[in-house]
Image (tube, rainbow, N blue to C red):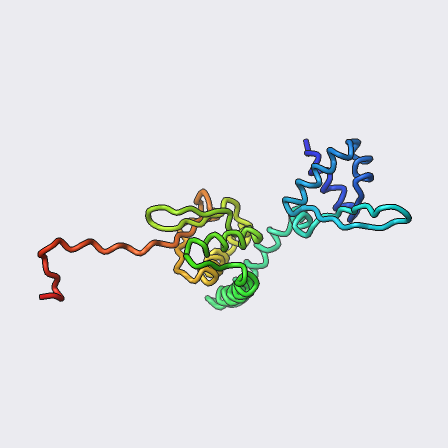
Length: 223
């Protein structure tokens, strides 16, 4: 069975917009309860609202679905992207089709870097990683990070471009390039969900510490 919030989104997609009163009447629930659902949907980035004046009295709010909510309802979109990349790869003989795809994805990566560059910063690598993950959560490319003995691990539990990545590995390579350029550090992609891993994962490895030289032992250079 569909949840109340799913029904709210269905109504907003069908009508384009609706008031709290209109939604409450259609769903047959109390307005305070409906407002709580709308607050949750707004926090998830699925619903937005704006005041609308009508006659005398205070303006009321009109709610409408965001672009993200509309995309979630577009079930054919991922399949279309997969087919487009497949056709691009087959457009030219040999490696020329794949080269075309690589060029397109590289340009898309450059645009993303320009768009998010101002959101990524910090004095330390860890601060830059934190701001990077926060920025790219908007694109669904990263969902978290943690520090481990071998370095910083960035991960994404739900690939937003799974069908496109099934058509060409260049999609994953483009995402890795975007992360590397925004972070300004070397990044290794150690796992992708589309290739069978539990999640998409990237590592920024920590520099290896040199072993201390025992006292009284000269190095080759010292000799």
